[in-house]
Length: 318
Image 1 (cartoon, rainbow, N blue to C red):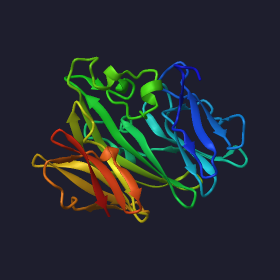
Image 2 (image 1 turned 60 degrees about the vertical axis):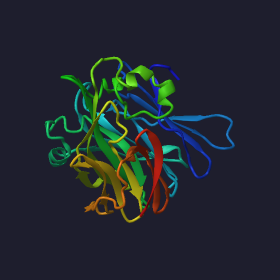
Image 3 (image 1 turned 90 degrees about the horizontal axis):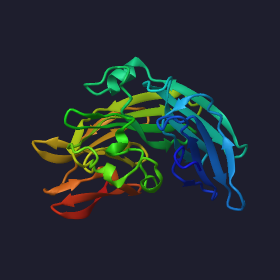
Image 4 (image 1 turned 60 degrees about the horizontal axis):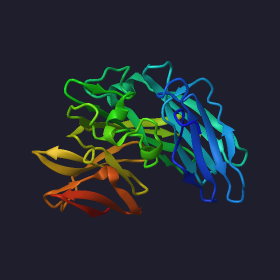
């Protein structure tokens, strides 16, 4: 690994015990991915198998990796640009076959003007609509397709603005626990904004859901509108997904007369959005942190909460 140029996706393990990770090279710039390799290691193998996925000269954003255990494939996906310092144009996706160690599907989905108009925040223009979006999750479908969930996140300060390229000086939505030790630009001082002396406001806005079929073609898209912000901390903003099988429930905080309520909006397999009433029996004084939630069973999830100066956990049953 080249310390300042190469990075890894999350390390995943498939149902047959194969370790999978994607390695990507950021050449000439820390902002764009120019080469992606898939690294695998079978349980009985002595060495790692490294395969170039052949993404060509595409300028890719951060790469996300997901295992499809039913079809024994690996899915890699990321936003792409046409030029350096340009705007996000669409979604690049690739399906890699485990048995043949080769790609079986590859596509570029261009975001339409209609989708840009719905997804953009009130202050963004059409061309820059997706520049603040980050891929949060890839959910596998039984037919070999997948759902991709992304969310708009950015920071502002007194007259200053942190965009995608210098977002690292505040909160980095790409970050995993490994990044805190290995990400070249990470510093514990940066995460809390000590570099700039200004109060940092964290924003989390619209959620975009894309449904992609097994041929890597777009089936449908939809957007859950929301607008959240908090000062000096991102703990109470963003969302968490509860997968109940028939629906995906998106849980996030929303303000109502200075009270924080836990909202629930769901997406059906056909892309229909349903807005449910806010969750019942919410004790006063407890602030939910849904971004750190965890689904623990088919109908149950755990969400950490803040109560005065205490950290506690809430159990939610669907």
